[in-house]
Image (cartoon, rainbow, N blue to C red; front, side):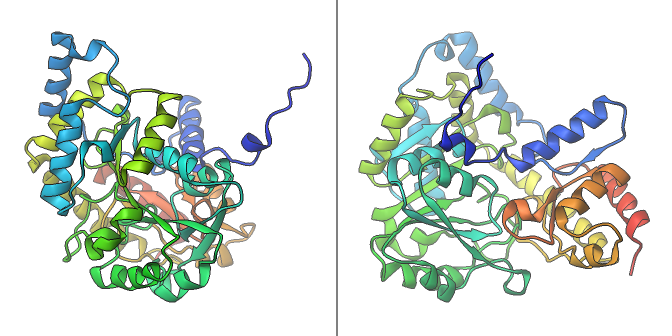
Length: 398
């Protein structure tokens, strides 16, 4: 076979580290090893019954058998409009809404529509692993702002102002955050909006996918809730995957200025075209139906969070902050790295935990901050305790 020369575009990006960890854990289990997977960001709950029933109805009626409009079926776009108005006090026309195959595709569409070669995109770290690679694929340059535990993993207005220049095209902000679970308060967001108001050439991508999975005393708000005059240069991205335990259904959506949404629609029309029809009908039921199922799941995530953080902070060399939401903890493991012979960084530490303890977690450097580990508590307390027992046996307690 002749050598295959791949494009610079594909060679510039890396496989998803979270998927890589999950795949390795699965392979080890298939080989007979006892591995507890705390790597994947996926709720362990089943999709609620009323959502599954809507999908079954769509199949049986034939509604889910045909192509739909590229940007989503009218009932789903209407449900998204209602959701934004009801929960976020945001008003969008149907031409300002795009339904995609997951929130990830919405973000990818946005970057391909907005970013030119050499444009800079500001990304606070710790960040979701895919942000920098998606920016790179689109031809942009990721500009990383590091926010350490001392500032609760949240960037300051001064940091944001220092990162912006004439080449800056976009800021991506994710709150509550993957991997840290922290959420920006109204006051913290207001400080960032004051900076953004001085730089009208900078667009904003507000990744709100964990909006409903939060237990902060303060209500959820994003940048346009805090400052409405940013609406004409903000794209809000969300989806049903996390809040409704619908990761496999692959439905996300974006809302923003019509000119950018229509450009994103054009890109989608030449890639996947419409999202899966049956999943769209299920998403209508998710957004329009009884929301008690979300509250039940969030209460359980909060219970797990409290338990996991307390146990992590007992481990020698580990320091875990309280989170505001999502289903992750992002403990500082630099004390473990310093103390354990043969381990010099978080990549080696994650390998050690997997190979020696049978616990799969993702190294913090995958999220832009070395010395940390991300673990997901989107699994049962029984599994979490089994994993933490193994870590305790390996590390000892303070």
